[in-house]
Length: 146
Image (cartoon, rainbow, N blue to C red):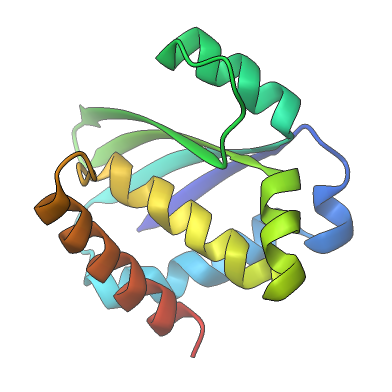
C-alpha cells in the first residue's frame, strides 16, 4: 500500500485542490497498480506550502537562499513491513505560475512525482541519471493522467 500524509500550510492550495488528501489517495491507488507494489506499506509526507517557506527550507537544508518548486528529503526508515520514504515540500506559487500555460493539477502531479522519485533514490546530478529520472517521471505522469 502507498500512503501520503498531506499537510497544507498555505490556504490557496485548497482553492485549486479542494481536498488534497482525497486527491492523493486517488492518484496513489493508480500509482500503486502501476508500480506493482505488494506486501509492504510505503508512506511519505507532502507539505503543500508557499515560496516563502520553500526558501526557508532550501536555505536550512541545502544552503541555497532562494525558493524552489519541490524539495525532497529521503529517509528510508524501514519498520517491519512498513517503509517510510521521507518528505516532500511543494511551492504553490511556482505551480500556479507554470499552470498559466498548462493545467494546475498536471503541473502539481509533475512536481510531486518528481519529489517521490527522489525519495526512491533517483537523482539528476549527471546527464544519464537525468534521462532515467525524466523517462520514469513521464511514464508515471502519463499513466496517472490517462
